[in-house]
Length: 180
Image 1 (cartoon, rainbow, N blue to C red):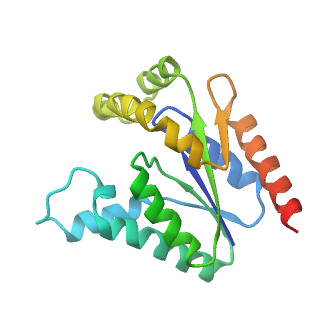
Image 2: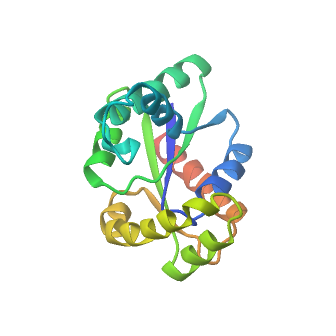
């Protein structure tokens, strides 16, 4: 089965693109790695961390939970999660590949001004806007390794989410036809 991991920072269009993509791909379902983090936060209240991804159990459990969902449903999975630390990405990638899954790493990219404008325009998460804005700089720092590690990089600065989802679908169709 295939895992399509949509990466990029806040404002890049990951969630909207993933919602469109799941409608374009038969037998695909959304998976939110954040929920694994919620489970860990509830059970590791005595531990110090500022982000779920800092926890080795998160990086270990996400591939395991995804694998179990794939095995249970028989569906490909679309994961939406920003991962800006290269070693964390390598752990997730290794965990998924070791379970026999094809992994398509898609990075949604946009210029910094567009990202900041989208963050300010998002009616959800007004209270965490400063945190989201800080992640834009972290994303720009991580961009070189992210784009090098990606199977597909899509510029979302001017492309709407439905067009981005169609581009990902077309990439997947061409990738599968070359393998088969």
